[in-house]
Amino acid sequence: MTNSPKKIAILGATGSIGQSTLEVISGSPEHFQAYALTAHHSLGKLVELAKTFRPRYIVATDPIAAKAFDWSEVPADTELIIGHEAVKQVVSDSEVDTVVSAIVGRAGLEGTWAALEAGKRVALANKETLVLAGSLAMQLVNKHGGEILPIDSEHSAVFQGLEAGRKQDVARIILTASGGPFRNHTLNQLKEVTVEQALDHPTWDMGPKITIDSATMMNKALEIIEARWLFDIPANQIDVVVHPQSIIHSFVEYIDGSVMAQLSPPDMKLPIQYALSYPERRPSPASKLDFTQSMSLEFETPDMERFPALLLGKEVAERGGTTGAVLNAANEAAVASFLDNKIRFLDIVTASRAALDNHNFESNPTLDRLLELDVWARREVSQWIACC
Image 1 (cartoon, rainbow, N blue to C red):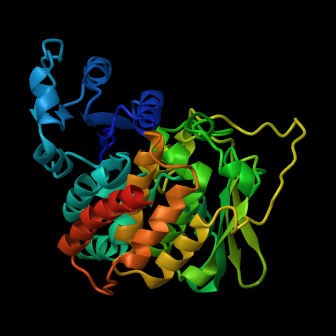
Image 2 (tube, helix red, strand yellow):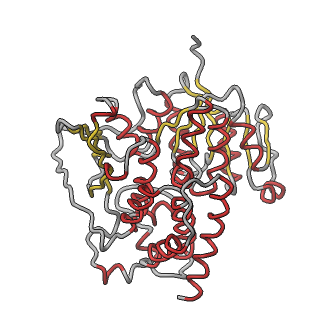
Image 3 (tube, helix red, strand yellow):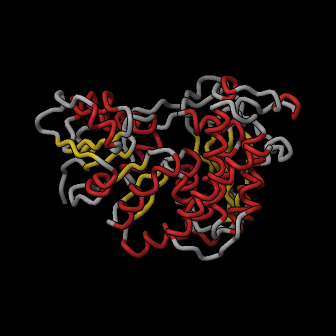
């Protein structure tokens, strides 16, 4: 056995998950090494990271932006490679131990797919890969001998809770949700929500797309779908509870009534480090709970009338097939339109529902077919916006 640090490739190194991953690496340089870092538009930030972490590779995935950028400050011992194909090159590198998939949305699919084809351990924050093509992704894991370890705090909590017992003894898993900034809003208030209000999350510091998903609770819908494939558990055994404090990150309930809960402050560095070091646990730079201070833990049943995205998540997790690709693409398109002030807050889920209802369902699609439907669903949302 070797004691050399694990070499980590981070897809989306300049985003919030990428930055938290680099904090974990900084805290344990004897265990982890930043081997490859990718970015799309934040090229100046990518160069600064290269100067700090001295990775073997940096990847600029946008060729046009890369061509216009001054790369003179890239360290001599770091190789710059450009384009989306370069992502496949670095995740397939024999030196890479773990690939952190931290690119948001559909854009993260190809890199994650290439890593699974290469049989790598994938520390997954890009839930859209499993939402879009969960069945096919898990087939890749089985075929090539790789593995997916979740970075999402909720799925990491479930993963840890499942370590406590046998899969056949699981009664259900319960994903927790903060409830977002509009947990107590009425339907009439939700009709008037602005972009600025929706971007003001009470607990987590995330990018705009994920923050809007949290506000609509579409993030929890996508997590239901992700959990269905990641843990191979039926949709009717996956529930959601609103927990505003974001201290309990999810539960696993067993048939004897025992419930395993994973608790920690809302800090992504803990699930990231657990995915990188699994099955070992090590001291972490993540913040710790202080049990000398009083705290209360509240739980509420989510209101499906005010947050109908959860119904979409349940439906897609149950039906599978082409539904995940359509929902994911439609939601991405609708969120982008909301951020551009083209539609209202409640229209995000309405447009996503319309696309889902209007598509021709297929139970066993190929990846190419799913990608075709990704394009179709975005166009469908644009047409919905134009006519409505």
